[in-house]
Length: 118
Image (cartoon, rainbow, N blue to C red):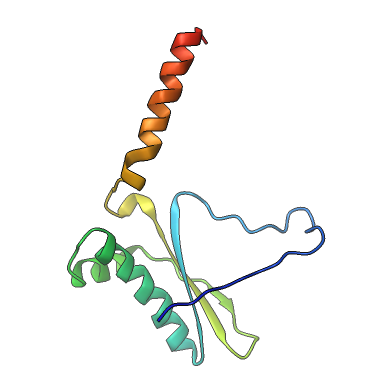
C-alpha cells in the first residue's frame, strides 16, 4: 500500500506558525479511528523503519521504540484521531545516508577553503 500526498500552499503563512521538525528526531504519524488504531499505525511505522534500514529483527526495534518513543496526541477533534510517534535519533543505530554524500561534500568544502586560505 502506498500513499501520495500533494499540497499547495496559497498566500503567506503567519510568522511563527511554520512546521519545524528538529533534526535530532525521527517522526511517524498515524491517523485513524479508533484512537488505538492511530497509535498502532504511528508506532508500527516507527518500528518498521529501523528494521528495514538496518536489517534488524522486528523484535529489536519493537523493544527499542517502546522505551524511547514520545507519543503526543495531535488531534482528537476531527473524525479521525492523529498520533505522532517520535524518537530521538541518538538512540537509533548510526547509518550512512546517500552513500556518505554529506561527508564527501564536507571534505570537498574543507579542501576548497584550505586552497583559498580561508
